[in-house]
Amino acid sequence: MLQPYIEMDEVIKTPATNSLNSDFIKHLRLASNHFGGDSAQMKIELLKKAAHFNISNIKFHVQYHDCLLFLLAYAENKKLFDLANAELLRVAAITRQYSERKNERLQIQLTGTGMAFTQVNVAFSFDMAKWLANSFPHDVSIMECDAGSEVIKDLIRISFPKAEAEFLIKKIVSLEDLFKEAKGESRLTDLQWLLKLISEKNLTDEIRDHLYDSLKIYVQWHLNESMPSRTFARSLPRKIFYQEREINRHPDAAKSILKPITRPVEISSIEKNSLVETARGILCTLQRETDPVTYADVNAVQFFSMDRGVDIALYPMIVERRLPFDSYIGYIAFKNRLPVAYGGGWIFQQRSKIGVHVFEPYRGGESAFIFCQILRLYHNHYGVNRFVVEPYQIGKNNAEGIKSGAFWFYYRLGFLPVKEELRMLAATEYERILEDKGYRSSLKEMKKLILSNLELVCDETGHHHTDVSFVSEAVTKMINSRFQGDRMNAETTIFREIQKFLRMDNISSFSRWEQRSMKNFSLLLSTFTNLPQWNETDRRKMVELIRMKGGGSEWNYIRQFQKHRALNEALSNLKP
Image (tube, rainbow, N blue to C red):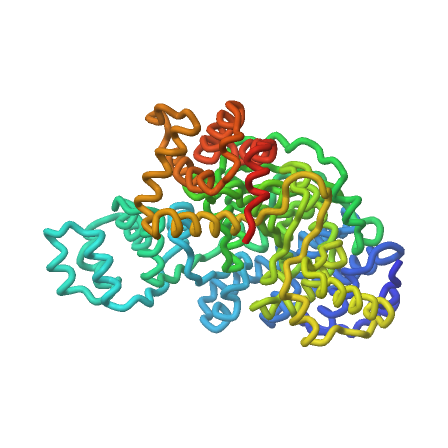
């Protein structure tokens, strides 16, 4: 067990002061990462002392807030948990006072922290902006629009009746002008009105998103106590797990991943909506977005209770936004109800690209253990046997990845470079790290190590070697060689051929998205050489898969895809 960094009598001797200061924050941070013995009492004494401090420095204010979040996630007992929660409420009350003073300097300093009673200024996607505008209409507004006059005129040409477009194009040079001239007496907010204007045009998702993005709109969101801020965002109610012993910093990844899971928790539609709101809120406050959260299929959200106070919510995507062949499933990991990490897995066959981002306040805790629970869930629930981390996650074109030591985080859990020469280099470097605790790999060596995918293989059997990019490349080569690059001809001809091959005489009952799925899979199937060997069962199961991708459960699609022998054998023959 790690020894406390200071003894209890040293805590009592900490110099008295009327204000929170950097030395106290440092003491509290160090104490937070120690468990067992008298560590809980030491933290309690520190919090009791902090309760009498004034908090006048914004930097210390934010740092203290984040220390409290860590203490709530890793509380050793109820008394410590309650004290940390009470202090968090006090910090929130102070933040509220800052916001109500209308002190512009303080508000600017707090902007972007994601704390309750602060504001977030960021450019969101069309769908996320729409969710914010409809969910919190009185607290979300347009801060600025960086688009030039020509972009505004393009918006008018696309979105307005031609009968009035000429007048507006001549008169309007800014978005503000447009609101003055065209909004009339609408009771909608400016943002709601603009989003409605764009929504009502019969545009594809891609064109609509591009049109909105071209406006370069920055949205301002004012966070109050009822919103999913970093201060108050929580998952579903659960029994608090008290960290009575040292935290698990070095889990046995192989053993953890293979451990069976329990069934998902039965949750209501209200609870599913709550989990989506929490996920969207916490990412928005951190000025981030992921497709599975932005385009979450609320009805398909699942919630799993794992070990040691960890819960994981899974976010499949609505059918309109699904990928053609693989399945992008997002997640938020919670510890004692606090959101501590997010990410997603791109599942294809029994293979998944995956990554994790641990929120900053919780780093230094059980990050490795929590990621193992995520891998365990994807392995057991989705049948993933090969996990892949791409170079960007570990530092390629990503300075934060190198700085954070992401490569060694994954390496310690069993992820190895795909390239043999880099695997040997990693083994040599890691041996030096173990021998000399002060050793750090040079930037030159790290830049070599991040050039390869990292992989963790749970089970060598099954189909998990094909990257979905191989499929796209095979389709491109087929269209270029067989149709001389004429994609319209290729899509039409191949659709008819595969429809006949699959014995699909009538697809009039197919939804729009099922027909889109059929078009995608037609192109894929046309690259296969083993189609003559497919039997009636293979064809029937293929039709079922196509329809699942276009409207059924993503979980069913993933699992049935893995069982389709002929399909997976054909995919195994695709090479880059």
